[in-house]
Length: 106
Image 1 (tube, rainbow, N blue to C red):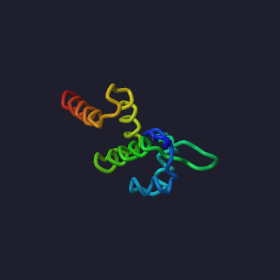
Image 2 (image 1 turned 90 degrees about the horizontal axis):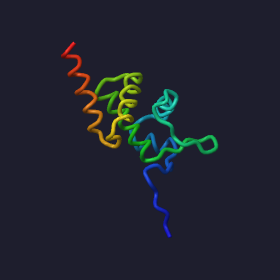
Image 3 (image 1 turned 45 degrees about the vertical axis):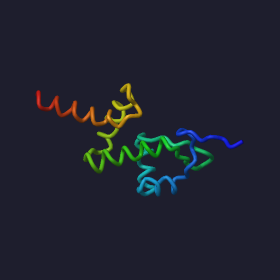
């Protein structure tokens, strides 16, 4: 019997996670230091799950495509996590649209 691996199962070492996300391992460490991602720790190594990789890709999108710094990313991720549709990238779009509407009003 083959055990099914879920999105939460930590399986990727940092070098593989970096390769899969197109980032340098140091960048992943910085994200972890800033509290933006928390990979599982086994002995002294980090293990990333599919969910961790999706989060890293979202962080990359927010920094590279939206121009946010890591402090801004933290705020967006906190809002994102509190919204009902956690697993939807539509939540991020909603946040930016909401911010833009508020800017126009003030």
